[in-house]
Image 1 (cartoon, rainbow, N blue to C red):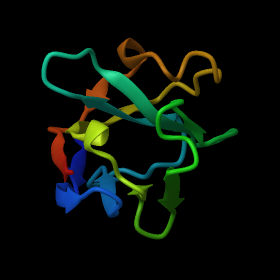
Image 2: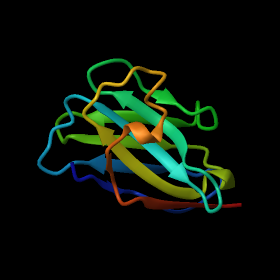
Image 3: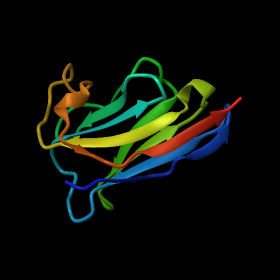
Image 4: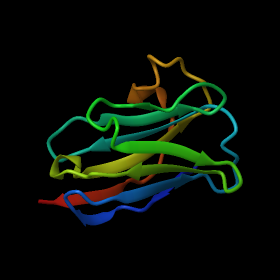
Length: 126
């Protein structure tokens, strides 16, 4: 599955950005969608995930109450609304997908996803 992610950019601390993830020609009707991020010199980190036919969304501890994951069924797009951004949120953000409806404890693992978008850069200035 080819994924397209967009919406990154440069924003001041406290600002907001909305990332989008779409799979042209494919419907996000089942499986699991996740967002991960990776900052220079750091490991890839789970940001948010959603089981498309089950429960969710779920969030990483560092983004809870600031980020919101949602989906628009009419456009087959998944959105990551990021509010109250902090310099520590600076990273390349990746959208990922797998056809498997992973259990909640598993969807935080990046190796469980087999399709990845190219990444979109988010930079938060202080």
